[in-house]
Amino acid sequence: MFNGQPDTIRIILYYDDVEVANPIGSKRVIHKLGIFYFSIDNLPKVYNRDMKSIHLLAVCHSLVLAKHGFESVLRPFKKEMEKLESDEGVRLDIKGYGFICVCAALTCVVGDTLAMHCMFNLLSPSANHFCRLCLCDRETLQMHFYEHDFEMRNIETHDEHSEDAAGMPRGNSETGVKGHCCLNELRYFHNVTNYNFDVMHDIFEGVGAFELKLVLRQLILFDRFLTVTEVNERIKSFAYPFIERKNKPTANLSRAGLQNESDHKLGQKAAQMACLLRMTPFLIGDKVPVGNVYYELILLLLRCLDIILAVPVHKSHVFYLKHLIYEHHAHFKEIFPDTNFINTITWFTIRHVS
Image (cartoon, rainbow, N blue to C red):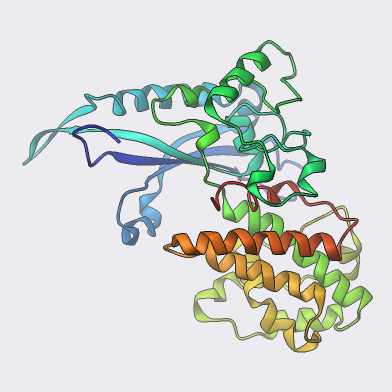
């Protein structure tokens, strides 16, 4: 990235909210904190797997962020990154080594959908043009499943959209842009080339929970292959692998919960949902007839996850994943024609598989 600086540090910036009070209590919002972290991407994997490799950058009150915006926190970080990404870098005097030049660049930003829209100054994820990588609208999303079906955002047009939206009090609903993002002033970063998405939020707290709930509702309430009590008993008594025992799902399924179509959740934390998804074939597979079209949707999702979570991912896997995702989406619309995709399905379609 830098001439004469092959050991440039690649910085990954993370953001997430932390609820320090009772998450279901009456004061759950007023005590919420926004936490910024960073990690070094080009450290060996053995070190990056350790929690010690995730460093705290900033802590602020979520209500302050909501009032003043992310730029008030990101500006000091941006100024420091500008020094690190300059050709001169930052000179450090290391005992035993003398002076060395350290260069760094922000390579990606990761967080949940709402946080990323706020950080990149985009309209709400509930807007008609809600994707941060393309200009798709909600109607198009329900019908097209390949990247080439969508108009992708690019740096030049996005900057023009940002200038136009800055003069509009509520942003531009035609482009989904609310204004300028200060991180785009950095030398090597732009939000439209930020292809990294958060698997935890988008799959395990989004698509995975959404689809598993739809399938369980069909298999339990309509096809009656199992009962709620039977599924809960199997979740409780299943012999989970040792590495998954601390992520054991909660056996909290209920008929009322499955019937509630306005809620896409299954009452599991992200790690529990990841475990539950992977264990689903072992938990209920023997009760579902071979070739059941609803059960097939979960199997397609798991095949996609095998590649999405793989380390490393080879180029041949990417092309296979592209067609797997198309098959998954098309199958979803075939068996649930009256159900719309949720927002997080877009990252499951766009760009990260290119």
